[in-house]
Length: 83
Picture 1 (cartoon, rainbow, N blue to C red):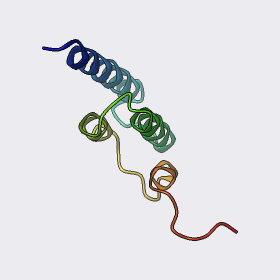
Picture 2 (cartoon, rainbow, N blue to C red; picture 1 turned 120 degrees about the vertical axis):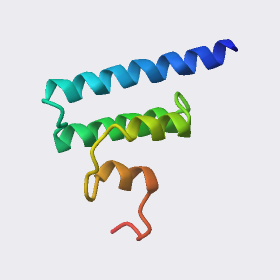
Picture 3 (cartoon, helix red, strand yellow; picture 1 turned 60 degrees about the vertical axis):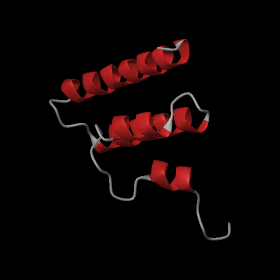
Picture 4 (cartoon, rainbow, N blue to C red; picture 1 turned 135 degrees about the vertical axis):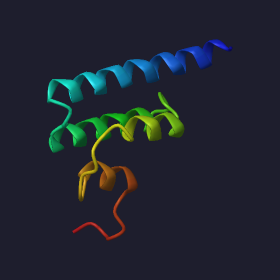
């Protein structure tokens, strides 16, 4: 196993542990604002290539869905012209 693969697995494990600790802290139901914060944090790590898409997908799968999550809109961009 390459050193890069080991590092990526360590980063994923650390993030997974942190997310699961938050979920446990809140009685297995992560509040919406924490889910948004986690998704935004992971999106930043993805954008700066600290994590890869499959890692992002696995970690965000731990988070509850949030309707109209602003972090998703920021990550995807907006189609309309700015005001």
